Image (cartoon, rainbow, N blue to C red; front, side):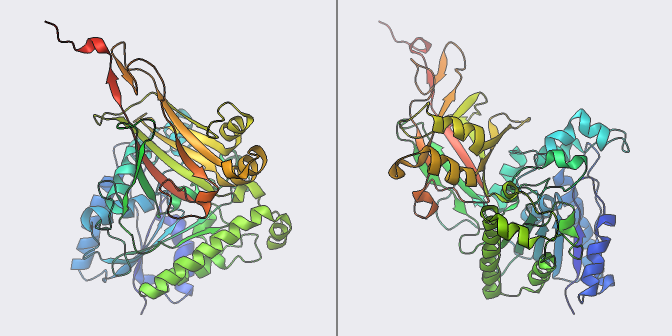
Length: 478
């Protein structure tokens, strides 16, 4: 008999939305009485993700003790449910030992936030979503969901990355012999209605593909010791020996990703169903690694459709997505602090061809390649950068940089002075003193370069800059 399954919804949703998924599972060999539908409060302003996970732990343990929930069971989550599951697992089973979940299937999880979270906290969100709940929209939940939130950073440092270690000693809860996570997301925006106004490239209308991927990367760029040539220290991965399966589909948005039996307009509408069943049937390290490889190939096939409009039209029965919807992106979360460890809130990141600042290429990068910069509302030292990889390769490198050997992007950072006595980088001048190459065409094919950016991936980058007092702050006289 297949394992029992628990299904957990996302923000502003309920278990009612998952009856179709339950029926799909029942039609594919799972008994309805073996499927649990979870419900939690997400729209009250005092409830955090951590609160839901704590209560989830109590409920799961009580059901196991009563003999109603068998171990191990599988867990399917959608959107914010991904954060709930990760919080629960990393908080109560930080190394995966003893965790009652075997397979964790994540459908469009908001692992690194959603651009809509800030909208949900606004007056518009309170009117649109909160009118049925005394104009509460889940303020605490949305703070955790906001792009570049401190909560996402802290959670990732618990279950995915170790910023204090550069070796392979870091341990986490995910592994072939522990919890097996799988991530599936669409990259098609909402097809109709007012929801179309929130669509963006590389997104399912609510969650960006790069922000869903659990294969995150972390590094520290330190300007404090030598600002002309800052050091780059990669963080240790808590999943160093395997890749978490990650699939990007061209025909699913944030709503249809939970309805595998619903036609999608594609001539391969059954693809989502096959992936879900494949994940739930996975058993063992070899099968897990094979799924990771095949899902990577599938994601690349999705991306290839953006460059082949004829193939795109042939794959869809009616209206096909725009090629821009299928672009791949880099999602970068930056956190800036001084060499005392204090946050730096007022800074500017500039991207340019090395030794060619102020050129047309620099303008193009900031206007077309860097599509979005979001300053976190709780902590302005943290920012989310959304970089279009397709426009970087096909527009910036191929059309704006004439010499192939110089096709790279450098970054500098400038920070406003603290006051008349304290500045950053140099006590006698303002602004950045050095820069660092953050991407190049060579980095697309070489895996040994420390500043390598990966497609469809979230990068957590801690930047340290020197805090410099002016001469008059301290003197010795005879």
